[in-house]
Length: 381
Ligand code: OSB
Ligand code: MG
Image 1 (tube, rainbow, N blue to C red):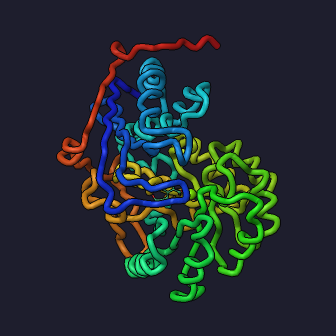
Image 2: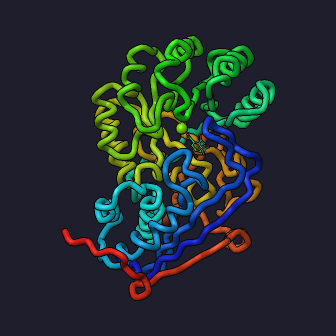
Image 3: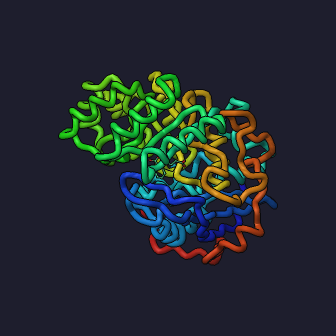
């Protein structure tokens, strides 16, 4: 497939409201859009790195650095037949998965446009619509949290995920169960806020009959998660700890989780995400598509990924209106019927870009061709 030019743009976008997790509050969406040009088409990807290295070590700034010093020159220097080759080409570079992923996503989108098929179809997705949930941050009061849960249930969301941290765990979960009963699909995400010293408290979470508890322990741990899983009835879902299909294999092997949250950015791209999906399917581990407060481009890529068969649990792939007053794609993502989003069928990621809005939000941009991209490093093996 032909790739002649690559461009990145840094965009800051207002969020409807700050989103608080155990590691801090996101107040603005800060991201990189990457466009890959070739064969008269343009593929696009969106980075999920946070502005601070708090969810992982990557930031919007490290993504720019990786793209311009390494990933873009390396990709422009290669001839590829298929987007699945990109992760292999980048594999000699350690980590920096979110930087790798934004470029790889754009190549997948370009490929699906060049071959006139939907991104979901190109990936191998089969679902016509995906079931969706919503993630709710730490709220100022339990009353505000309960109000939000009610609003999202009314909007039709099929899974309610609430963020927890020490001091904001048993009481909010109890309040939700008291108000809405035990039949609503409810889960909690701790973003690594606990340790095994908290095991007595974590065991008490079993009483809430949660669908799962996401990443209760350290971001780089699987061993303690396996110890905890052995003591809990509630399934553990890993997020931060899983960066590759190899991490997935090890986590499954030692019993560190029963469910995996797949995020394209965290695992370095769509190809690796698909490998994780396939391995989990072989081991009867259900997966779901996580979110990183994506704007429309990233959201649409998530929808395409979630159309793979083993995405059997509703993802954090909510509508554009969850976080934004106006999205960078048209039309914006909506629930096509309560609890579901239709997987687009048109070629590529399935939406048009809201170039007017993007133009207003761009802070910085740079483009590279085969001749202009300079390599700072040459690989010798
Ligand atoms: O842990 O899943 C997470 C947002 C930012 C960083 C990490 C996480 C999240 C979310 C929001 O839970 C998911 C979404 O709605 O995009
Ligand atoms: Mg999470």
